[in-house]
Structure formats: structure tokens, C-alpha cells
Length: 115
Image 1 (spheres, rainbow, N blue to C red):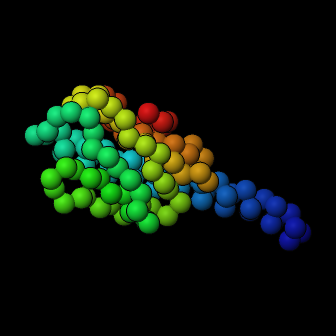
Image 2 (tube, rainbow, N blue to C red):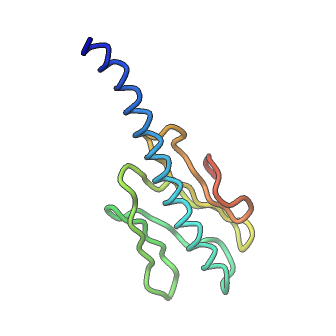
């Protein structure tokens, strides 16, 4: 009986954990996207470089102090792309997530997928 309970419970726990990672990835993508939206309030041109340094995302805005945002556990930067004010996108990946990739863009806001 215990083996049956274990075999049924394991997929539920894994499914819950993968959905939780997706939620973390959505949060990270939203935070990064909101910072890019603020960047474009008074700037133009391509999006600033975003990198991972340890457990942090770092947005390097020329001439300013870099913006550091804590990355969620299990979530990494996918990349940033774009050409300007209305055409930019950033995405993150949660390898163990159910959907894995989430992007935030000027055009669509938060959606699943990569830029």
C-alpha cells in the first residue's frame, strides 16, 4: 500500500514544484520587464545589457549605477533582445518548470515563451 501512495504522490509533488518554478519565472520576467519599461520612459535605443552575476540579474545602464535584481532559485536569464522603445523583450528560463520559458515584452507584456 505504501508503494502505491508513494507512486501517486511523487508526480503530484513534482507537478506542484514545476508549477511553482513557472510562477517564479513569471515573477522574474515581470520584474525585468518592468525595469526595461522604466528605462524607456526617458531613454531610447536598444535595451541595456542584462547579465547574471551569481544569484542576481544585473541591468547595466550606461552612466548609471547598475540595477541588481535577485533571481529566483531555479530561474536563469535567457536573454534580452530588441531595437528600441516599443520593440524590446527579455526572457527567463526555469529548466525544471512545466512551461520553462517566460518573456516580457513591450508589445505583449508577460507571456510564455522566448523572445
